[in-house]
Image (tube, rainbow, N blue to C red; front, side):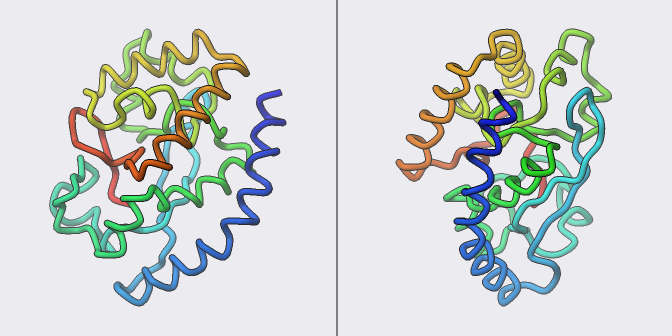
Amino acid sequence: MKRLLDLLIAVPATVLSAPLILVCCVLIRLESRGSPIFRQTRAGLHGEPFEIYKLRTMVQGAQQLGAGDAISGADDFRLTRCGRWLRRYSLDELPNLWNVLRGEMSIVGPRPTLPSQVAQYTEHQRIRLEVPPGITGWAQINGRASLTWPERIELDIYYVQHRSLALDLAILARTFAILGNGEDLYHEGEGGGWVNPS
């Protein structure tokens, strides 16, 4: 049922968002050189690595500048003007839909993190890896990046232990409400979260 829900949402969403992604790619490329699509290795189901796709919001080579892969707040000098706008409306996450179609991600689940973070998980925290990572999740609608990293992991573990179709639908409804209010679902605040340069 979860995979069916993923495809029912991801297939039409991918088609409908394609023109918008194309426009965003052009704007990104006009402002800064380099590929408009950002790729990075993340930890997926059971910690297996996969390559995530996002719209690039920082200057080319941002990982070699400033804080590297560390937290990037709204005042990060590596962010482009277009990138700030993309993050403001969470449009940089749209290519995540490609990962859903490939079966590497789900629409709802814990956000995928870096393998280096997963290597530091306790046995309890590894429960977070028992489901595919998602575009949106329980932690995203309950504080997002304003939470400390341990708090986010605990919320994700709650989701894993209580996951159901009803909970997924509730998370989706809350996600759309947050985005509809113009709130940043992924990058707001710094807290203890880890926001990668993308």
